[in-house]
Image (cartoon, rainbow, N blue to C red):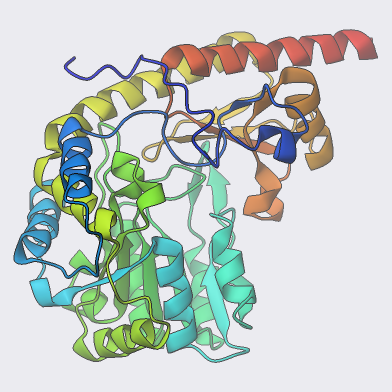
Amino acid sequence: MKYDFDRRIDRTGTASYKWDQSEKLFGRPDILPLWVADMDFQPPKEVVDAIKQRAEHGIYGYTMRPQSYYDAIVGWLSRRHGWRIEQDWLSSSPGVVPALSVAVQTFTQPGDGIILQSPVYYPFYDVIRMNGREVVNNPLVLRNDRYEMDFELLEKQAAAGAKMLLLCTPHNPGGRVWTREELERVAEICAKHGLLVVADEIHHDLVFSGHKHVPYASLSEASAQHSITCIAPSKTFNLAGLQAAAVVIPNADVRRQYNAALKTLSIHMESYFGLTATETSYAHGDEWLDQLLVYLEGNRDALLAYVKEHLPQVKAMSPEGTYMVWMDCTAISNKPAELKQLMFDKAGVAFTEGSVFGEQGAGYLRVNLACPRSLLLEALDKFVEAIREESATRS
């Protein structure tokens, strides 16, 4: 393998959100953090070199989007996902979550119902509630150790007057890569009842063998016209700190309103380094990503095998995509406070406690696989040892 994903890189002292606030968040400085969704890998060398070259120019003024930027995104979506978009469909955002918030503000009114499918990425709740809208929960159904959508309830909620669906695809934290058939059913319901679908597809490049991400807007002309698709290189290439995302809006009227909202908020300009990183990643990142996916799949398989051998009471959901594993730890405890104490105080590890993704997540933990395998296994060892010590104390 050309890229060394086994190398452990010290991120402490870099103002890392993940590594440099362990004592503040978890009560001790020596936590192994496998929680927030960024990776402990460097991006492709081409990206690092491009940022260095950009920095060496020495003037960091306002930035416009050159033709090469658009070509890189259009080419990536065509090459990696078979989705042919028009350059004019592209807009921007400082990140996917800001794009979700702008969409909620622009296309719904205070008090409107917005559907989400729990357990789901916790900022979905924030962008609804903090904008004065109402959460309409369409809980996912657990069948055969994976999540499925409740289409019957979705139809009822859409018919009852919900205005928008926030769709997480691929799904975080459950790791589902929704099939074409599942997405077509969503599109049928939303088109019938006039819902705008805002698709968070930030994990679209992180799909494991045997599965294929289908961009929601690529399903049909109808799905394209009633949707906004949010993507970013941040998850794929570990660039979250550069604050850059792309938003694909085929409907000209929806795009005009979205762009006007960006300008109203003065967030329509591009990040100086974010633009460079985005363009370079999408133009030159294929080989790096292909090798990353092999490594992440190996980490997934290592975790599943480890849990089966050492934690038989835990049910780990095998992800079809993303670099997260959703673990049912209810046999250990279904109380969030007890799982936090077990992780932070006794094991010295930080996974994401599941109740932040919704009430269904109580008793679950989300584990970030995007780290050197030795670090992943070390964290699991510490977690298992803490469980054994806790069991011995109780007995």
